[in-house]
Amino acid sequence: MAIELVVVTPEGEALSESVEQVVLPGEAGEFGVLESHERFLTPLSLGPMQIIRSSGSEWAAITSGFAEVDGERCVVLVDSCALANKIDKSATEAVKAQANTELSALADDDENAGERTRLAGVIARAELELEVASR
Image 1 (spheres, one colour):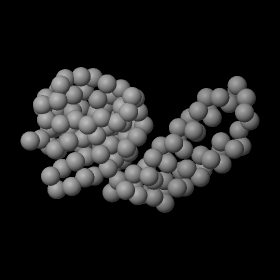
Image 2: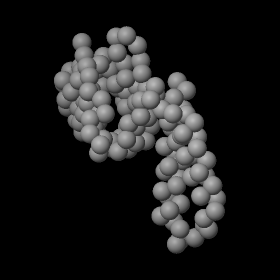
Image 3: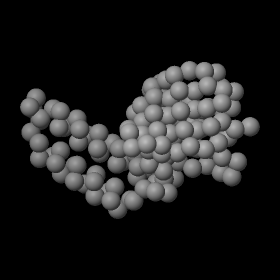
């Protein structure tokens, strides 16, 4: 029994394969999708995605987006998807450190609110990628 998992980012298809199960970070918590799952559309949160194959599991870091599920396919639409084995820990640590430095230098006022939010997002994504790369 398998379900077709398709992960799409603005750059194109990041992943397309048959899997036993996928566990996604929904806004209301994690949920698993198996073959013959009931049809639904749901928002996703920044978080780890577990891809379960008959040969074992793999992890990926995904940003917020949406998942469309029917009995045969699970289509995941996100801004980015980083497979654990493709994450460069050194580069991700550098991105996180740079964002932390820039965030500390910004005044905590309304004028910088948008940039503070953007940098907090960069830091959250880097932390997630580092956590997923360590699994």
